Length: 296
Image (cartoon, rainbow, N blue to C red):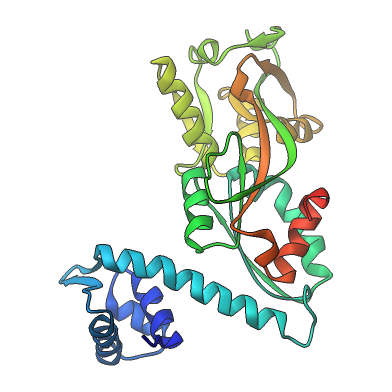
């Protein structure tokens, strides 16, 4: 059985697009040409890969299976290309990262700035994803590495611990909870919270914890960054649960009171997820070494 890499890349484009037409456009093909190539791929595999209707395309079970393998194959092809460039093994290539909210907004920008400044041949695609999507992305090959916080259930992946952070409560100075040595999540539910945007890892995590308590998280406003959360808290709009690293940094320039959360889940281990560290291209291993020197 012979697979054309161009056909596999076309299939990935279509699978990740809402329609065959848009997938074909990404592959620089006409819809008719793309349709013919997908039909030929289906004939070769003797399996239907796509359901087609007026609303677009949807993967069949066979299509889902092919997508997983196609992503892995194309990722390995990209790895091979990156290893044979004029820049050297770790100075060129494209790195895709799925990461949680704290990583995307807090520490990765600074790490990547230094890393990329030293490697002009490297490009990075950084995407904020939920924890389950980070694990799935590393497993199916749609990302090179994942960065996650908290317990990880990821059979088949390598988990590389690299730091520890904790969640705490930030409140305005003079707030009734400001004088407490520590508080539980249940105690905070009596007050309105400042939350991150929908789809953020932290908001999803907190909602899960509140649901386990049988309570309700009252959100007064949702914003896009920890800095905005802290500014709202400083102004007395509400209270918020945020990572200690962000809270300490912003408390140096804002009037905030920080209170320890008396919850076992408040202490979170940060980890890098990969399928197989030794099989990654040099540029990805170099970035992992920057984040977690003891892991490589």
